[in-house]
Length: 480
Image 1 (cartoon, one colour):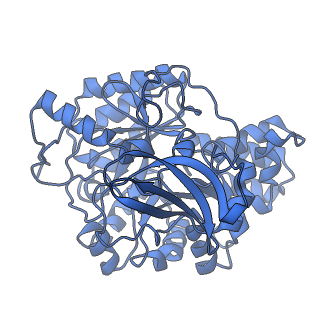
Image 2 (cartoon, rainbow, N blue to C red):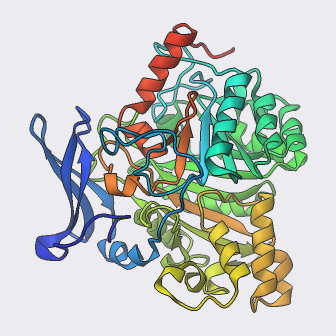
Image 3 (cartoon, helix red, strand yellow):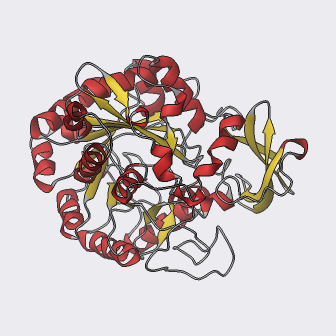
């Protein structure tokens, strides 16, 4: 199997790596597709009878692509599925019986309004009147959380997002509702403006026990203007300082686009490692759905492997390519991660101290010398992990105590710093076989759990927004 389930019966013939299905990014028609190696990269190719040949790069390093397929492992069944298989993947999402993985991370978009109008926004949110805007009630969010609990039994992580969720008048009650359902990791996905301007907000998040997922794309004005439409560096820094004062842990979330801000990747990591509030950085190559650059070339898109190479090249004293290990709960090409131990002076990636692959790659019948360590590492190398959260701290402590890690590093290990590269699929890169392994789900108001990459690529987002706006009245305006 390759690419999370793609057949490779013809692999090696004329660069063919496997066959799958994809969609036409213009008409969304499902098409037969091929994964091919060309010039050292992996491309997804297909032909639409109406719109012609379509190609997109899905992985920037064909050699690494082949090597990491060993990290693909069988998925786990969700406790409950919400839809039937009628039209076939990707048209029955909900989760349907064809889906091969449970949900590690659930996302609830509480509104479509925002206090920014970013030139790049996969959710197509904004500050003005929206044709199909909506804002959820607390009761709706509680119902969606209950659906998540039914599907997972004991879900481990949920993220409240938007739009900009911090401007929702009931966001604190919604976050509290998630905590009351026993979800260990509750995250707020925010641009940080309210954190910077409202001195009461960070302490309120700390009281609930919320982890902040903070939009942070770089430092230069050029980066800020191209991605967010205005320079926000000072407000981001003020937001982080407020989180540090309140004891709120933060992951920086950086959208990275070719030709805009890839040169700032190392600086973002270095800043995050040294800031007291920051416990990790999540890099996301820009998803070409919603609003994105009109001149974006799907054959020149940054991928997971490109970000790994950028980090290693810009921080050679700290990281190598092999410090980043694929996350096995999804397709190995979707997400790679590392943990690093930092004592204020020296930084050491965890894979240099612990043979991570020895524990993660148990499907190949390797010996597993310590089940607790395996479970701890699987918990870290998962979409449900976020640096600085209580579950991650417990797993790091387990690893430190159960392995041959030197005693002087054990206290440092509990404060591990996490770096994740997450490459979400878009209409140009959607691989249906890989989609079946998706472990990040959009929880929608009717209780369905829709794989995140399908939600943004196939038309589900548009369907939900239309249904919600018809139900509650057209338009949503951000509070001023």
